[in-house]
Image (cartoon, rainbow, N blue to C red; front, side, top):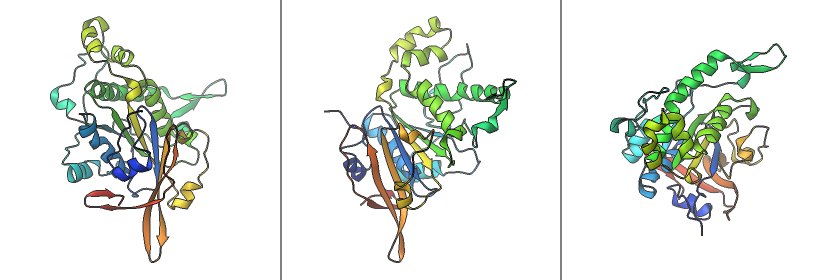
Length: 295
């Protein structure tokens, strides 16, 4: 039997037939303020118990407003969610300090809007990324790639990506583009290759790379996506659009609200869970001082 990855929420694990499948991508859809960040931080913190290392949080929010990750982490889990600042440029000393390794949060990719906003027309009539943006993006990767790699090498097996804003067509979203690039080229790439790209010259750091190989197929990712839809019924009826990562994700969880009598209830359900049985329940939950309560 495949070992499951617990979300840290027993009721949600039960709805997922025992938990998430390791090495898969889960997308959580819901309107702003519904509780997605609570789910993500609970999942990340639970790695401390389940994996021996907390998960890492990559925040793509580029608006400058706080999503309260640090406040929630401190209040709910007594977790000092520090920002990763360690940058590894080519041929520089790659290894982070112990202080760097205590930082499990990165906000180094602050771009929002449409892909076209970051492109320029070509003489052939097509479009390509503006070289200034590409240079800035590649420079940001000098921070993000070691953030991911060195935490994976140290035992982290959970990735939470938050701050994805709504877009009429997901294919137009720069945030979906960035996530897809990171997921394919770093998260789901073998450890040796990623290590060799960061630790240069390779011969000098060969011993470290070989000693810190990890199974990239065991890395489980939670992508939190903000939607325009707020009602659960609308989320359940949501059509799959071109470029929507939910179409290829292994698991989809939706969080929405509905009127129940004279109050507004928060509801959650699992709408997709490939490779496993799942519950068809729609479960009410509350967000309180102790976090998410699924009853």
